[in-house]
Length: 346
Image 1 (tube, helix red, strand yellow):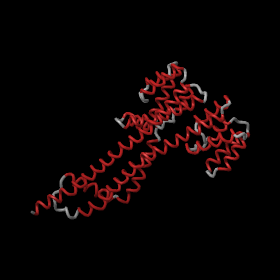
Image 2 (cartoon, helix red, strand yellow):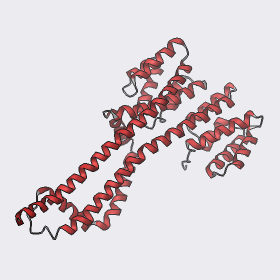
Image 3 (spheres, rainbow, N blue to C red):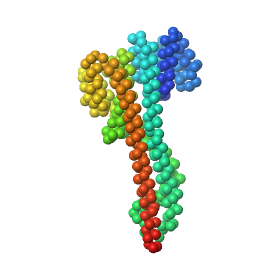
Image 4 (cartoon, rainbow, N blue to C red):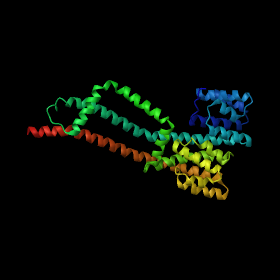
């Protein structure tokens, strides 16, 4: 069976917002879906509404129909099912609209945060190719009778290799990108990579804060819809964007299922911030875990914004430093034989 593409956070936010407003105004769900698919020009959005309406005419509930379409994420489906049983469909869809709006905003911030480092990396690659393919080959005839330092010989060797195989460079680039994509789709590699990132000094803590914010937001939304804590953990797994932390969520769920408190299970986990467990204890003792999760989600959303800014502030000087080191090596490798040649002439 072909895997269907799920709606993105932006489209999910728009879907649940329109659904909530129209149903609350007194329209039936089939009428709501009919209006939504006519009002929007996005093909995937319209197709999801059309399929959802078709499955509901067969007698399925909203949650079951959403699952059949294959366009909606599992946490949203489970929240809708719980809302249908409790009679809070409008309230839950409104909450889902806010949740996915935040998710879309976070995704946008992450894309913006990594854009500048990506540009710097591309600039460094193009600079390297320009030097190795254009500058160094023109200097080779001049330096042919000069005894070259080790660094210059290494640079000349790299330049000669790249120049000879220059027509294969695009193919090599495509193969490297394809290989990286295949590797990142392997569970063992993705888990190991995400674990190293989370354990990395300074940067790792910022990554954990961003992922913890997602975890808290999803837990808050699911728990407030009436789902038991183990189900919340089950459907939160896979939503952090980090496979290492998703495995930690699975471990936390297993411990909670065996009778351990959520706060204690998180404290024993090595992935999430220790502060998270300390705050959840307060909610468990007071019997207001739902409210405490909502407050934690709001707090970590703010910390997530700060963490993203810190990541950008950390990556920018690191990338500039790397470009500076690379440029310095090139200048030294090119100029040293020139200085030696000039000295021998004098």
